[in-house]
Amino acid sequence: MGLLDKLIAGGVVAAAGTVAALLLKDAAETRRRKGTPVAFDDRLPRHDFERLVAAAASRVPRLSSFDISGLAVTLRIRSNSGVSTWTAEADFNDYGTLTGRYWVTSANDQSPLPGFFADAVSEAVQLRLG
Image 1 (tube, rainbow, N blue to C red):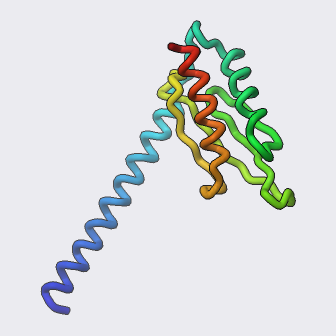
Image 2 (image 1 turned 120 degrees about the vertical axis):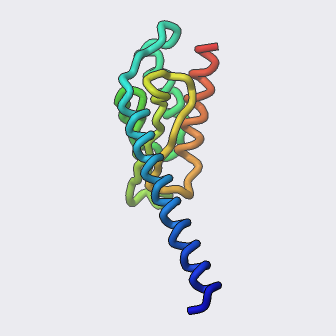
Image 3 (image 1 turned 45 degrees about the vertical axis):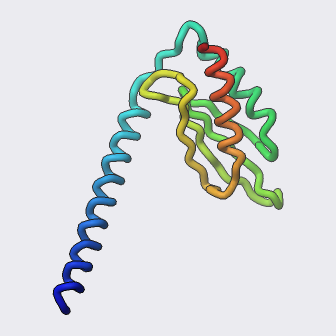
C-alpha cells in the first residue's frame, strides 16, 4: 500500500469516526430535548393543542388513527394498497415548550403525509401563539 492509499484509508476511517461521533451527539441531544418536561403555555393549553392535532389529522389521507403523548403525536397510516399500516411520529416538544417547531420520524421516508400533518399543526400553533 502506497502513501496515497494509506492517506486515503486514514481519511476514510477519520471521517467514519467523525460521523459516528456526530450521530451519538445528535441522539443524546434528542434524548435531552424529548426528556424535558412539557409546560403548556396559557395561550395554548393542552386541550387546545389536542384539538389542533385532531383538526390536522382529519385532513391527512389514509390516516387510520393517532395518539398524543405530551407533545408527540404518533400517526398510523394505511398503505396505498390498504393492506398494511405504517407509523410516523411528529414531535413538537421543543425542550418542553410548544413553539411550532417539530421533528418527524417515519417508517416510510418517501411519504409526504407526516410532513403535511406536522406543517398543518405547526401553522396552527404559530397562529395561536402569535
